[in-house]
Length: 255
Figure 1 (cartoon, rainbow, N blue to C red):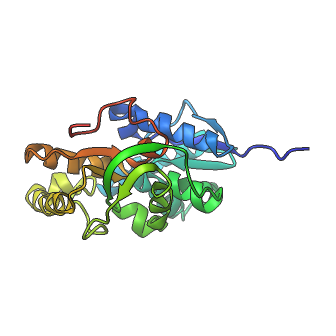
Figure 2: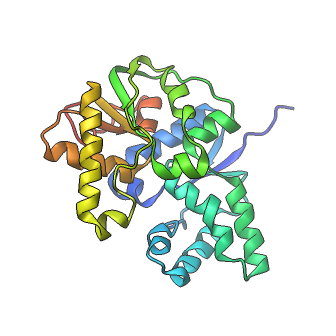
């Protein structure tokens, strides 16, 4: 008897749902191509990170309860976002340290939750994709994915298998772009200076495409590049890996 396919729930994320649905479709394609049975729980909601970062623990706990309920029963939970996956994986259990039953449920969910690209590489053992993309790309390491979940080499491994794509390393790839969720709202001047430095580094690579794994970072960098009149296409890494770059225009840029 053939082994059953892992049952994977896709955590779509707010920004993908509202601003970039193509990333969700790309995630489904990548997971199905890797042999997963993918479902999208209809009752899912925000992971609660904006409330958590604002110090609103009560609302964060209410949101977390809803997420835990929606995603129980799946083998894995996968998000095309290091920040959302990191929120569930790293912080949910801490919210319920005074509630033993919820603590265990949150801990169990956290242990089954992964960022999309690291799940493909580290859990499923994917080493390459069949996509093609003609151009030179550079990659930004988003803070939560890098520092909370160890996402670094996994996207680069898969991008090297994309036909026609040349990958050029970004100086300061691990430096924050200045988005930081509510940080960019609380400290707009500092945030703008940070993303300005990041945009200059991106342009200096000569790459025609910027890739990353988090929509918040991508939208922040795309906005700055656009305001500066820079002709750099900005895309989520999943779109390129899934070969769905013809399905939607770049977040900004000419391609």
